[in-house]
Image (cartoon, rainbow, N blue to C red):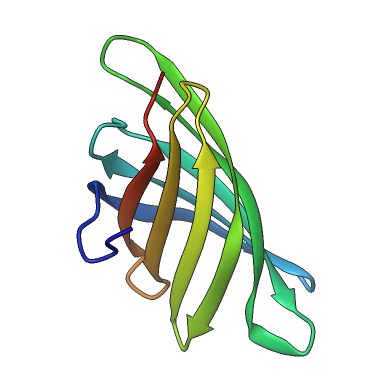
Length: 123
């Protein structure tokens, strides 16, 4: 897989951030090539020995212009450098597509850059 050439890109915004002792939760929304205007919800669980990295679980849903609903679970990892998080996960869309996704999240500006690589095309 050529990580210098993603199959698609998107721009999202952080719309909610909730903090607790064991996790941080985020909601995102925006535009993604081929996936319309998705809504994502993620929970980030920090590694107890090093709070700059850990695992994530979440999901995304979007309606395409023709009314088709696409949904997918997310599972992956993250690492944080100061106010920026680098997030890596795979999805398994209900249309059969499987993607590898990288998010670059700037918590201060609430801007999120998304890149994805299609591992398996939609059915």
